[in-house]
Length: 382
Image (spheres, helix red, strand yellow):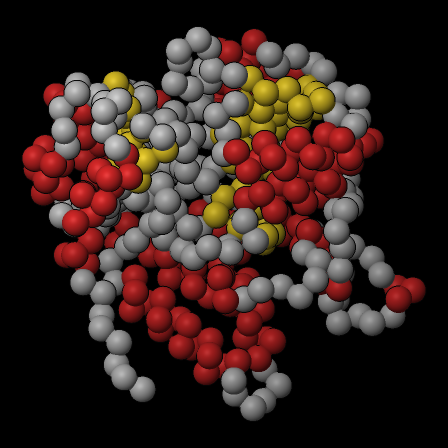
């Protein structure tokens, strides 16, 4: 087999897409090694392949639990964040949700809204979507709280938004929600890895993320946490299967029961490859090598904000570091073709993306300060 070229980290100095796909030093070699090891074990003519695959998947779940300070029995795997939320909300069922409101912000990741719009019909709840105030770039915590009364069965908080990188004040929101008697779920996708998160500080009922972004993993790896006291209430997921059982290898149809821990949210045959490919990123994030990542991110974000100001772009992200995730987002001038600009920048080794006229810039560990000079030359003024 022809030897594959190794990753050139220097070529990724202009990578500003951590809100979309994360990278870490030596990633390509590490992921290839993990996949090669999986191929060797899966194709070996013995009886251990399932043991190896399940152990590889469990390793990722254990690292996820460590990352968010959760007990190992309270985390489960999914294909993506939408899938994880579907399992959780479905398990709450009509008993908890019918006739009540589910509250969500209008700047949530759209896939969650699509999911909930359909589940509202099935489970009998009203989906209440809080829109940004007039001409505001994002839904403020004040606006969200103003709509949050005691008829809200479940509030879904987007910790860091994908369109502005606005960071929710979780301590304040959770305190308000507890006073209303609501369940609280958090989508931490855009913050997990670049910001510290603890499921107990403040305590939330559910949290989910993907490894794809700041955790530098692969698509297909959704990770979730469910508060142990809710598991104790024996929430029954709508979709169940052989892996929902305490012993997945029970074939007696009369003895089916749900696992006593979060693994009850498994169902059919689990996937392995996305978890194998995501393990190196999680391992790197939890290692001493990741120290200083947030400081590096903030230093470059400040320079990006200054550059947007100098170019005359309207900033969509909060200026205060404590109110912002890992990204800087701003509106391009109306005369600029966003896709043409993306292509132009990519031709100079600067990788960004856009949502409409909004440019999204997310510096990570491989991003170098030289990218600021490149952007200063390549970005048009307003």
